[in-house]
Image (cartoon, rainbow, N blue to C red; front, side):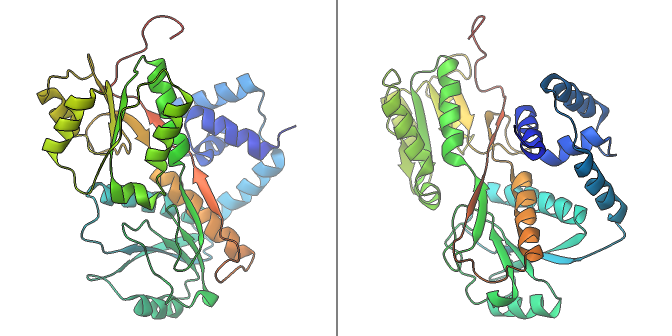
Length: 346
């Protein structure tokens, strides 16, 4: 029989909400809209889920200490990288929001530090963290390979909020890019698309150990009914090269991180979504309205803080012998750049 933790996790996943939101809605905590509470409780009733009274008691204790008992400070550390994609700023801000919210629920404050040309050096950061008694370090995603080996990790616990880190090798939490794209391709096939085309920056795919291109190639091999449109991999996005690729290979739906490609598709004769579709691989609230994947940066921040605090509670300071990677599923976002399902049962 599944545990309550698994049940609430599956309930949250089915609703596209965080576990925290579902738990708060079931407990009647303030800050959750009436519509969300009704939605969560209706779904819980249909599945037969009951809130564990022991869990409720623990959460009640936690609520009593919120805002009154503080346990320390956690650090969120960002790198100053001038060539980082512009969308990274929104992603990092959302990640920090999630981390700060979750840290506050556990009685911790979160302070943000910048390392690099407009910030401090890594040795200076080490001095600051020790002087302020900060022992938990949440490292934000880096565009290039990060190196925080000059921190005295015997004094800290750390979590990296991206796929992998080697200097030093720490536990990490990141979006499940491979699984997200496999699920996305299945959704597109249900919608009737047969020629999905992916364009991606080479450096971005390398950072993820080729998960975007690997997922596309794997899905195409497993589904021979889908046309094998070669991925467009580029160092720097060039409109002319994209247009030539689009005209030559004729994808009926395009997947990528740059929504401005929609304008190039339409200039080449496509009508989105009537004749062609577009899917953004990283939908952000302030970006162009598209169908696509929400990589859930707020949830990444929340989960990263949970892993940090768990290590602090177990006194597991230092570089782990066996770094573990925690995957967070992406969330599908409907948008105006894909056609709707055609007919019943489709």
